[in-house]
Length: 354
Image (cartoon, rainbow, N blue to C red; front, side, top):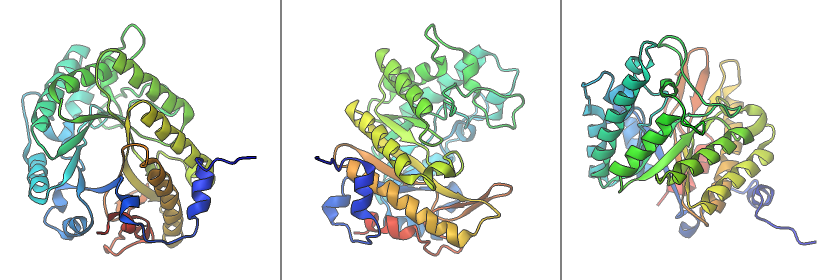
């Protein structure tokens, strides 16, 4: 019997427990970067970032809530600072300013009509696409984000302005049941950002129904003549992505990730892990959980390295250090609260060291 080693289980066996130095050609195909916040420029975090990375995602600076919080009022100061930073240090940039729940309170207000939302969305996406299209450092742009729930239904509005919601669904669906805001966003990005690769970004874990809906939607967008160049996976582990999948059943979940990347590459889409971090809840042992984080990160990196041989794959760390959210816990990256390397640093370090 011939046994194929294209599956995750074989990749895992090949790399399990091995702390090895990657040859340059082995890591060259996997671009690894990190996120910085505006307030972290000119700080120790910026210094750590520049020691390791040449791929940047400006965290919140390009979002609609930051740039266009109210109609006819534009605030480009923060994202312009990042674009200057990228130019100075010759960085590749993915713009994270999608049509998504990262919306202004104006857009989330329940009194907004579909026409008002459409006009506001058109203004923002048109201005964004035109602006970033002229910046040579910008290689990718998230067009939409967090569009679909785990059960495969569309993520939509909620009462008030203080909940996590996607107000744009209020614009309605087309005759085939696809959100008008998604189609319009890709129409505008296709027209006004021909120099940038357009990303359909999605959160949560490896839920089959959810990703099936993403695939169906991407093919539908393309059928309308609009570009979709990449799938993004917003990998907030143990927040949207379940512990039962990523910690307890790692191999099975990595096989799903492997299959998803294969589908993307087969459909001429690059694949981006856009927001990788790991949640440690307040009542958990942080030291032990950081070791588990390292194991899971290694499993993800093993898959990404293997798949980068067949098509474009990138990995973006969401933040570099530890973020704390009251009532939720500690979001871990590769440095701790004192900006000292965590165990997961040893997984990422071979990928970014010259």
